[in-house]
Image (cartoon, rainbow, N blue to C red):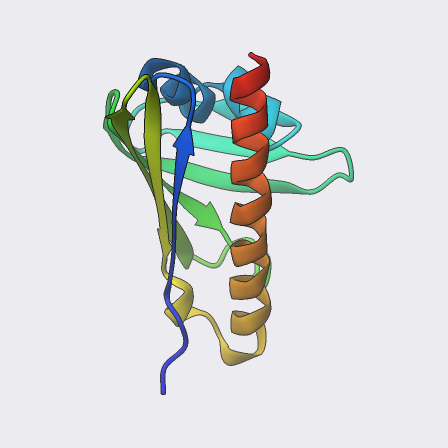
Length: 143
């Protein structure tokens, strides 16, 4: 029996796709709901990172941009050394839904993790997406 490799979530957001796209792909947008600080070079292969007030940070790399529908990036994993090349891949797909946006998030790549960190990382990301997507909705409602 293999480890779960994929987390998938869909949320309905009241904001139009353009507004959701900006929240996902700009430093200001990401810092408003996901990290507390962020930087992003929005092009395939571009570097991105997010930081938090507790001193933690995560390196990301932009992989796919099809404005305003698809945004994908790789995510550095906590349970691995910093120079480890293994990453998860996160892809956001935006679809107009009435006056708002249906946002679909898929994160894959957990199966490549060593057994000792797999479950912890997977569970952390499952919980993380639940919390962060709630914060995204709150940010967009307030914006």
